[in-house]
Image 1 (cartoon, rainbow, N blue to C red):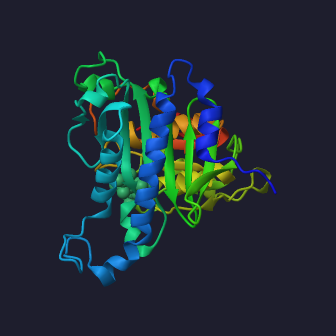
Image 2 (tube, protein in one colour; image 1 turned 30 degrees about the vertical axis):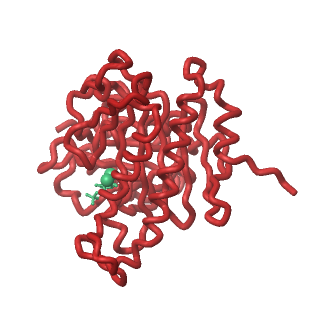
Length: 336
Ligand code: AHG
Ligand code: MN
Ligand code: MN
């Protein structure tokens, strides 16, 4: 029988990836794995909400049904708070970060930023959603409350990042700076198994992912790049293929496996686009670079941007290096 590696075994085997961490980061990733399993179970039941009681209504037991993104947020926070690895968490679902200040957190060296449920509008139509996480070493002194500066660190300071994708299979994909590794969940056994070791994105691709309905609002560089993607030129495999799910995690995951580019540019009504730097773009940029791809705001490397706010938005160009470079060349040529 073939021997399959579980996520737990893999983390222990690769603990040397984090020379200064003494197992804390391994434990933290295990906590994320545990919360991920709980969220997975809730998502699988989501379709039953209409039978058992829709979100916002009472369920059959007379309890209030929580919106799934709020529920996912609560599950991650309580799971991580119950253990001692992090001293605080920032989330899309909370205006301010929370600081964990109980006895078990006094030696905690890490903070987490997360999008507990990404693509949540897709839940009602049974389409893939995900969870994104980003991990930093705190900059403040252990034993003191977490401060905003612990969270406002550039992406190049991330020690680990990843996502769970709740798709046809549930997967956990992460990097700690030594490549990108993907694990597929076996619900019968309740474990994640290494299914995609050392994931790399093709250097070039032919999929572009963008909400083209916003075309009139796009900067000229993006409009010209899209037209270029749609031109007939068999020598460069054009026209390319358009694929857009509307869940960043799902669009990212497909492009990572097949090669492609994801763009969420600025628009006339959203000067910095829609996606959030700290818990959507930075973790995805870290993964993308570790897989051999690129991530920028159209001009600058995402992971070098200095954050100023917890919920800061940023334009996002992410994918196969050649495709991102081509899009950046159009942004440079048609600056407006
Ligand atoms: P969230 O569900 O966490 O708010 O994120 C939704 C994001 C992202 O997942 C997706 O790529 C993007 O919003 C889609 O936005 P549009 O509907 O504007 O295309
Ligand atoms: Mn999101
Ligand atoms: Mn979300």
